Image 1: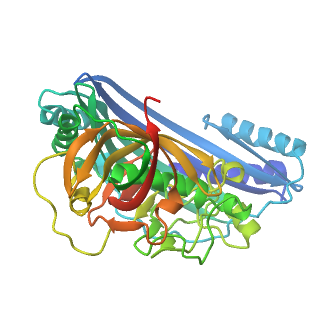
Image 2: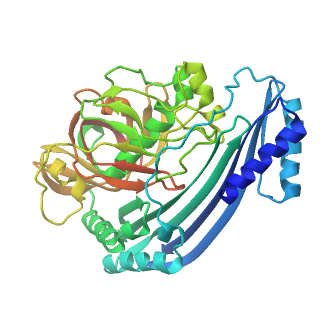
Image 3: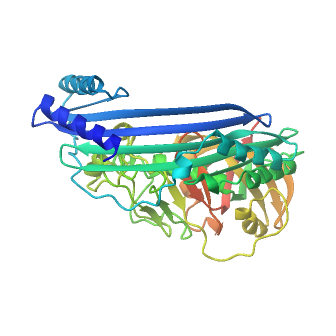
Length: 457
């Protein structure tokens, strides 16, 4: 038994003793360790590390629900947590939507855990930063390399008891030349998968190709989106579209069984190996197919949204999922199945997008999206900015850099039936900017993207 599962089990027993036999309680004890190496002006300027163990208790007592947490894990700290949560439950309103506890359920098998990533120190991260900076060959660089390790245990009064651990490594860097930025990022469960030289080379090539941008008129453009931009689409689809609470309350575009996307689109949530193998309610995680060849087949649920929708939990409960909804946070867009001969040569185009660019008569190659915000949740209309490189493509060739532009676009509409002209055959696993969440995506060739103005006005 892990230390975290032992903590969770102790709190469950303490709750039984103090709250009585009628109490329903669930406890998550999680240890999280993150280490981060930041660099700017082509030099490391910060190494930071943080490790915290947090115990969360959710208690349903006499028809009322309350929760509490603590990072004080000695006997006095745990007793205080239970006493505070019992007191809070007595002051809480009746909880008519309480879905009950997860019954004893075995975990699904997870990929092998990488001990070296969990134990990595600043020297291993610094080596990748060094390689990135050297590969940029004199360009100004900035970014980070991080490693994270998490382990956790869950127990409840219904008898569910599970434990697990996960590790992640990520690198995100830019190279800059005369105001033009190029970006490269990658995530993996193994630090050894991160190649600082390859990432630095890509970022520098983009920066060198981004000089002297032209300005284009607003309008609808055919586009190739690189995986870094596709990750933003997956993020917003997961947060607002495939969110089980939004679906149950009719605030989502999702219609189960409907052909809402192009047949080339298959989207799955693949959490195993990327996060703990169970959610905050102790429900085992596993692969969830959200879209199968264009047909919406599922949304993500915790126990509350599942009960409201007449479904079952998909293992997506979070600390705030009853308020904000359950979110699938490790989405993967399946790559194209047809082999395409890649275009050779250097330039701003990542290998995952080269073949798609070669098939575009006139349009834009877009590297990244930034500062995206929802304008209408039901149709998932998003506004945001392009970033880190946009290029005009004519007859399959990149002909000019383009200044950043604002867009206003319904994401489901852009991926709708007949709107996807191609899906890249190579995938990239990309880190979220702030957390251990990651997205796996190929490049996308889309028929239309609504560019509504230049970034300057």
